[in-house]
Image: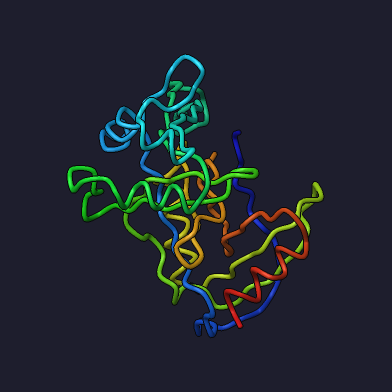
Length: 223
């Protein structure tokens, strides 16, 4: 499913001091079309019914899958330039089963030092994300709050200090057309596709299933 990252608008005064973090927050780009994930995908295998072919994956109830999306690049004046298609390879199944399966693979399947494999919730199951290095430091977050966006969706907003605002805008500019993951204590809570540079962003928004979930996440990140 394509998810669009929306700018959470709020008018809230704050200084540049980081909040008292109760949870570790990371922002990392999802590395799609990666040779590493293609290799892992091939190891797990996929038959004509989309089931795994590796016996260990079958026993664990894990399968390999792909997420594909397209994005139109544009000229400086906003005219369509080129349409690109991206493929995100991942594993899906029970969280504990995925983590156990990955841990049991040989060293030839260890991710490079500058990448990690993290998991996030996908409907009633979990899925993997192949992620690059952290892009935004914890210290950039000075406040959290929850709300409802204009189309009725709950969200948690992570207010950024002056350094964080500049950095986040640079991150979104460099990530247009790609997925950008937000992790809380090592778990992916959201990984939307960035449709455009967020030139006026002063917050990192994270969509939630319910307002209660949004409230809980806000409190969990900044106590």
